[in-house]
Image (cartoon, rainbow, N blue to C red; front, side):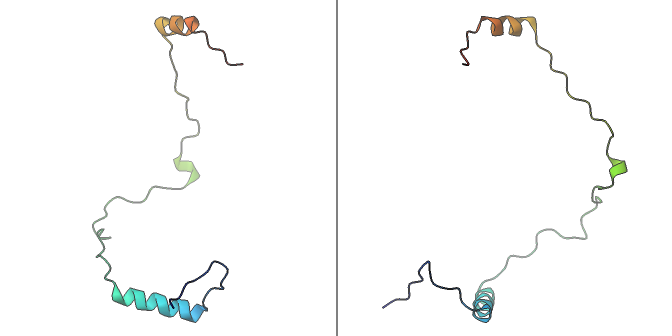
Length: 79
């Protein structure tokens, strides 16, 4: 008979889960770190309030005459 964990069973104890994790970690090989912290040359961006612009302008959207004409010809029923 095989072990089958049902949804309503309680979790294992913290010691048992830690032992399971330790056993798994010792049996798998972790890939090496790909980013060397000494090769990072750019500083982290500032989080200070004074570094941000006070007012950000909204982009201006221009509608051409041809687009306005096409939009006026559409008969959309949005009721």
